[in-house]
Length: 118
Image (spheres, one colour):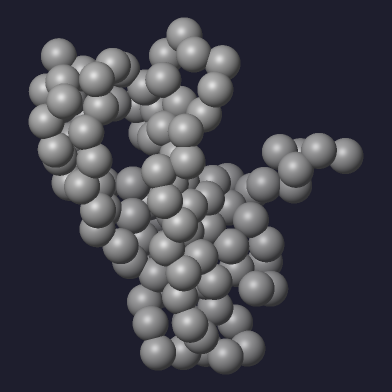
């Protein structure tokens, strides 16, 4: 079994564990733009000691490149934080942002968003 076989995905409007990526669909090359990632956007995640999102990872996979670049990890403590982050990045070519989140009970979740670069 591979890690990719156990990563779950779903529509965030019906599943509270999916990381939602909010960012423009098209950006200018080498200019900073805002990326917001949150878990529980439409359906609140409880974030208690017993059931919480531990972290969110953000990646970029450029079109035509076999490698994926890790952009950052955002860690959260149970009960006192919300899994919602804002960062600023710049890209120089088209690619797909990938977000992973980890729930201490329900495991790994993923979402993706294509970004066009002009």
